[in-house]
Image 1 (cartoon, rainbow, N blue to C red):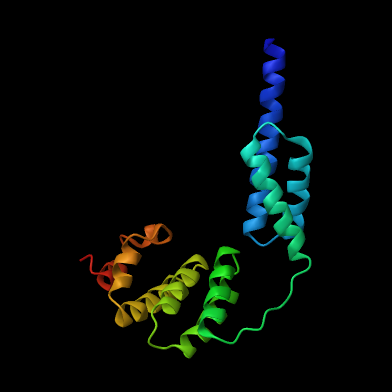
Image 2 (image 1 turned 120 degrees about the vertical axis):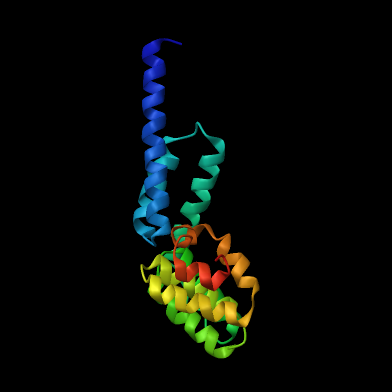
Length: 170
């Protein structure tokens, strides 16, 4: 293989990877139309990386399915909790908080909802609110101390004195 051909293949691969990365950023921010556009371009232009190609087709299918989004009735704790987690994963933190608050109202002695509320608030930039929700989760069950200490999303809080006090890291 000539050096020119190697450079051309490398350039094509880098462009393809850039498309895929942009698509994943859009997907995780809930920009399904943009993600669909970028994934379609990736699938059309790339067949070098079988695993990524297959994964891109899966995400493309998900994006297309979002256009036919159906509203599911939310009734139970699990309905609201799972919808809240889904919204956190989709980058819609304020919506996630609303759903998780409803879940917490349905089961006030269940610590999972306040813990996830803490994550949603932190990801939304509300450190104070995050700590308040985390405190509530820990009051319900000490297990959430261990979970919070090992939560990669809380990495920036590890040096926060209030966080340390809540999770028992003094």
